[in-house]
Image 1 (cartoon, rainbow, N blue to C red):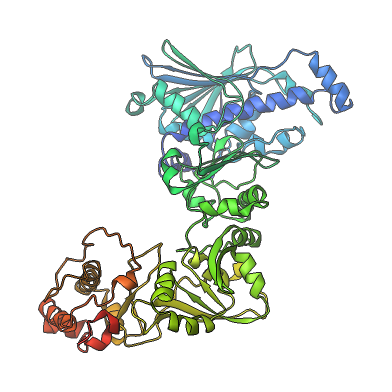
Image 2: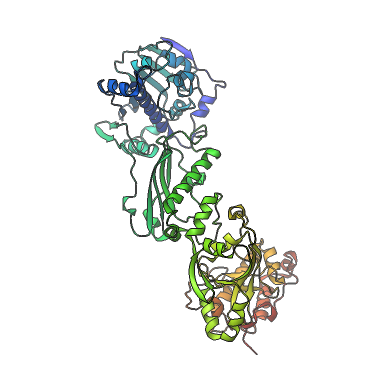
Length: 633
């Protein structure tokens, strides 16, 4: 019996590589064995095909290979529950004594990343790179038994300088050992069989379900047939190409894009919120091996889409995997993949961008992409409703921006309900209102529009009109010079910071996407004091009670109370209002509301707490509320 010392800089690294402190789970040993078997089979396939291509034309080589006996790759996974022995066997390229000495025993040195491999000039890019995968088996096994024979095809490859030995070899590698033992074997067929005596703690966890799950989880599909046998039970997994795993998702309100190009294969789905339950978690594979279980950390979903699922396989090695292969590095390669996904959407919707509008986010978060082409697509996909030149029309954001380019403009934004209420009840004032603005933008997608206008907006604020019920947003925009919206994605405007009147403590937003938001005006003295002190639990609860009391009074504007109700900071009830919130809020507060509020604060906070929280000057009066919220005397 021969032996060879394991070559590794630090002896304790093997135990590190064989632990769940290095790998995310003990189950990954199956991933490592699978990818080794797949690489071995694909390498042999590439060698078989390459035979003769070094001196023949491609057509002649194809003809020559067509009369040879075809190579049928296969992988066998076997588990015997009576002995707790698990084996993974392939009929691939195999290993010999040279491979054992130069690669297997040298932890961190991979044959597939070596000059020995590259000089063969094969039309295959291996998955394995780091040369540490076998160590993962020691998480679940006491030893490794490797029975292998090198395939003769290795000596027919391009640029082979020395013929390799084809003698079979049996290798024993014990857990914690510093040496690997090996002897001549008697294997007849080329390939490798790795057998693991499973530790008792894991033996009961390995069954047919686990082995099938491992194959389906770690590979997107199985072009090489994988035969699984547990005792007398058998399964065959052989899926030659990938398929969409949610076949019933082709319904109205969903778009499924099939992807097949030089980089990617698979599917991308975008859909409405109501169809979210039809789709599972996204999956990303590289060279048919799962990249990570935590796809959300890769941030491949365009943030401007609310519901986006993908099942993609990167055909070639693109992403740089970390050492334990649990995820990919966040580098320029990952950015290249993200940009390619965006380009797929551009190619799909570029000629009909309006069709994508139903899938986009509502603008509560940034909609501007870091990629200008995506931002340009969004600007064509999102339509807004505007009152322009005496009529209401729906137009894409890009059309509006292009139409006003080269000018300075003044814009008002309000809900359609407030607009209709204004023109119906106060027609005499409405004419002067219209004359002040170049355009009125309604609530549909207004937040998205404002983001695209961010490069041009000079000032923006809420306007609380003297006309009861009329609250809107206005901004001035200097569009004399064209600017790229993407450059403002990290600082784009969503809503104004406050309103024009520092006297007003709070207001309602009127937005359909968030129709009952109570907005504290940071420019109001009382609001500023509360916002500054809301890091304290009691002040946060106090703020919530104030907001809920105002909400309750707006909902039940016909019911008057003589004190503040302590709702404990929780929402009081669901609500549906047929009229705009600001219109509903006319005369919503009692004249005594400010004083009742002061009394409540005095009851909830001690004098010491008021002092410690910086609230000594917190005092409400009628002037802190919108004049038409309080009934006339």
